[in-house]
Image: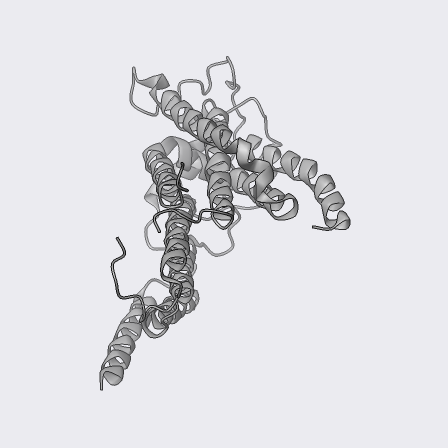
Length: 152
Length: 112
Length: 88
């Protein structure tokens, strides 16, 4: 792509990453969460593939695979955290430790430190969606180049 | 009234699925059906004169909130629709690489 | 001949769909609301989150999110299996 497109893409990428991290992080206060923020960052991966070419990201394939598996395992491990009472029990809510503050009832400005295992689950699912959708976009783009001689 | 619009979307998707023969148009027809179904599912939980079900900076005079359960289930449905579309498009790409055509009536042999 | 048969079948299905849409409850006045009233009233006390929709997705109905994460994983594995390139 031309110089203008590449320069604007280099400016847009950090802003988009910050916006995606904000949507994932504040999932328990404002509309958003793991799936929505992951889709925002995955569209940035598509931007990289379109402007800089798919050959630049060939070495990132193993990174995508490892991060997706770690995200899924972290989600299941967080679900097993409260197995003493039941599966998927929110043991960190209203407890006073990490992410354990209580929230006053009714409309309020929002406390980032609240909601127990919800922000941790948001991060796990966010990483999983970023790696999964990025891998799908990368595979569809890499299939067009080369690949002749698969089985005749 | 919004329910009838969602059913019209499903009808348009069904018509595309039955009449067209190009593979990409079939994928688009399935996507239109999924969009109609998700829209119908979200519009089932609307309550008159109510605000969004979020307590951060909620308007202080509001008394009722929209039902949050259909919105939570539609999130799951959208992600599953995305997974289905990705798999279908991967199959279309491989079929075009092997058969050389995208017409559904001309793909006859089982390559193998 | 087959064309008219398919057109007639499509018309019957569309008429049934629109008839069902008109027969539902009027838009904006839902019929029963006990479960959603419980969620709206108790989400801030039990889950300590301001967003009721996220607390339903990840806490009250977390099992459905586990199934959805599995579907996403299976789809990515399927795409990677179909679109592989021969390694020499």
